[in-house]
Amino acid sequence: MAWAGPVFWPYVNNDLFYYPFWPQAYDEGYWAYAYDDLVDAIFWGYGSPYADYAHAEPDVGLTARPATRPSGSRRTQPEIVDMCEPAKGLTDWPLDEVASVVQPTAEQRTLLDEVRAAAAQAAAAFKAACPSQISLTPTGRLQAMIARLDATLQATRIVRPPLDRFYNSLSDEQKARFNAVGPNIGADRPRTAQQSSDQKACGEPKPGLANLPIERVEDLVRPTERQQPALDRLAEATNKAVAILQQACPDFVPQTPVGRLEVMEKRIDAMLQAAKTVQPALQDFYASLSNEQKARFNTLARQASRG
Image (cartoon, rainbow, N blue to C red; front, top):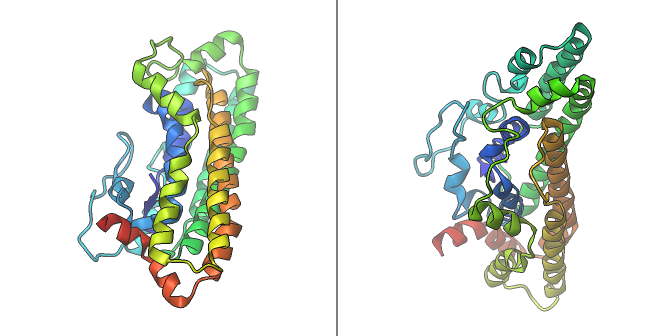
């Protein structure tokens, strides 16, 4: 989900755990969320009509937190840090189970230990990138998103090489056992109509997704004739960002953990490139505004939740 306090995509570290080893938790529909995560997070922020979902918990492995907070309350620094910490055991992935099922040789066990060390290093990268303050402007919020996505991309790139080396060291029989770790992974499950619809939703054009926030910005900020071209460039950049995400939609769910981590890396890279595509246009438009207009733009999320 998009935001929890100052943290963009608060459960991304858990997503990096679940998707490679438990893809049935997301299926094809998981990829469609990239659009809303990016566009909503830039324009709606913490006061989004959808903000309550940012406090929803994944089904497994997280310390419970309240789904809602009292009006006007603020998160403390320990709470913020907690959002950046994966739940106990998640940074190790199910590597003990993998070892039990695969029965690695001594050489393979050394490679598996490298995967474990890389997972811990990736977790440290998440923690280092944890923000300490809420950004109250759309430009600051976008910069926080870029920093978070960059840390996430680096985390996947830390883990992928040792995971690839371990997987490639396995025999065909060991690979088959590794692919079967977790319930129903690798099974030839029947595709439902909803699954097909979700996959189609990820790849099809989404012009309205960018139009809505731009229309809200225009209605609230009321740009002058001189400012309008900058808003038009922001709309164009947002549409390009959506197209980048569209191109990163996978055609199928890979059947191996290494394949699923690869498509996860592709998705995160697409989100980062999309955010960077929007950033210059957003900065230019925001800089062109008067102080009054900036104040109205900063309250876009609250206005949206009232509407």
